Amino acid sequence: MSAMEASLPAAPTVAPAAPPAIELANAARWYGNVVAVNDVSFSLGAGVTGLLGPNGAGKTTLLHMLAGFLAPSAGTVQVLGRNPNLDPSVYRQIGLVPERESVYPFLTGFEYVRFNARLQGMRQPDAAARAAIARVGLEDAADRAIGTYSKGMRQRAKVAGALVHDPQVLLLDEPFNGMDPRQRLAMMDLLGEMANAGRTILFSSHILEEVERIGTEILVMVAGRLAASGDFRAIRALMTDRPHTITIHSSDDRKLATALIAEPAVFAVELQENALSVQTAHLSAFRVLLAGASRTAGVRLKEVLPADESLESVFDYLVRR
Image 1: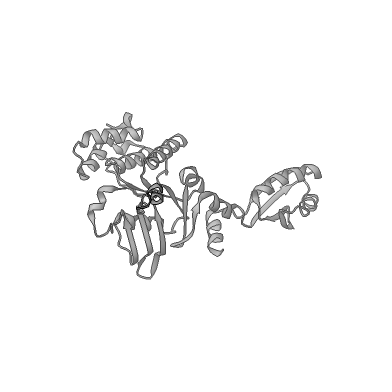
Image 2: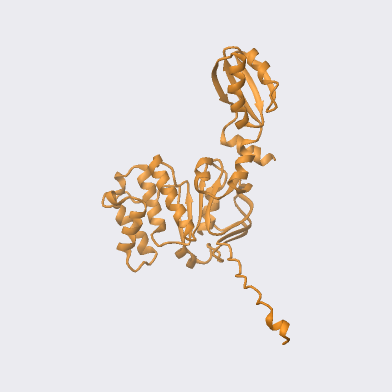
């Protein structure tokens, strides 16, 4: 070895990238002639990912394939490098919160969570159950029958049962249903803590704000297909910058129409019977300019209604892009 070679610094060691915890490749699931999931591919690592889509989009079917309940009709589904439908050993590292009721009303909250701990082979099921119940804030109701719980409390009991064995992958189907705002925030904080600890969390919702609050990534499903995926800011931009139709009732619709038609954010104005219909591609900018235009024109706004703000219309727009 020459003196020059001896003096060269050693090449830095690059740690190999961690394999994805969840990986789907062209996954599909159909029931006879009904296609529930169609050619879906994505991979997820640690963090919180929101699975967003209208009811009937295929979110539950997708989660059930990841949990091992359903085999894909085509393509592949892997969790932690294993096929969950064929390798039951991966169940020890998966927690599932189904949308449907899955709690026994005659059991207390503690008994239900301990039952799950025992199913997972925990060495100290009582201690594990108490710890899980504390994590979801159900200590005061732990010894009450689940049949006496509110919807939000039952949801938290289901979450406690799913995380009692500290799974690496947590799958949640509409987990915030029935929770009040305080309970939602507490649950969101818990999921964020688990993600920061290296867990992979995938939860479904049809409410964008829920996904946006804790999900760093979003998967958007429509009619069984993956319509969009990526950072939630990019998905939000796609949803908010699409064409919008606004119906306005004012003290002088004709005068307001004259003021609005000159605005760059407005590309169509139509006078209707007792109303004004306005089309804009930039909803946030339009909200600001509408207030100014009405004030300048001396027109009083009575009602401003978005005519096409259903989630279905938003998702349909994403699919057509």
